[in-house]
Image (cartoon, rainbow, N blue to C red; front, side):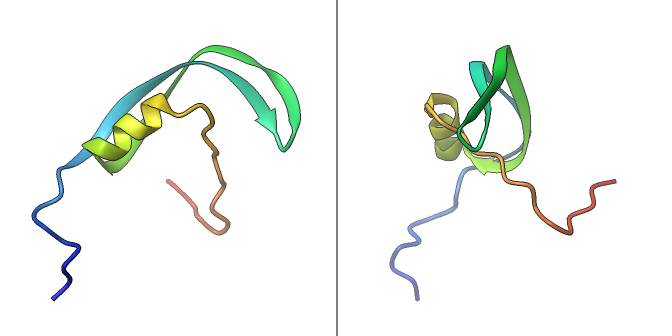
Length: 69
């Protein structure tokens, strides 16, 4: 039995997260700014969502071979 698991995880699905104003970058190159960025998170815990909302830097990584239809 895994001792790290203490109980049910508080999961949320399909929630929109407002990230506020952001600088848009690719690698180390600044491409522009956005007044407000919102993303839809398919599944997360409430703790992870709070980390996402307060993060100074968020990386988006394209999943190769992933075809969303």
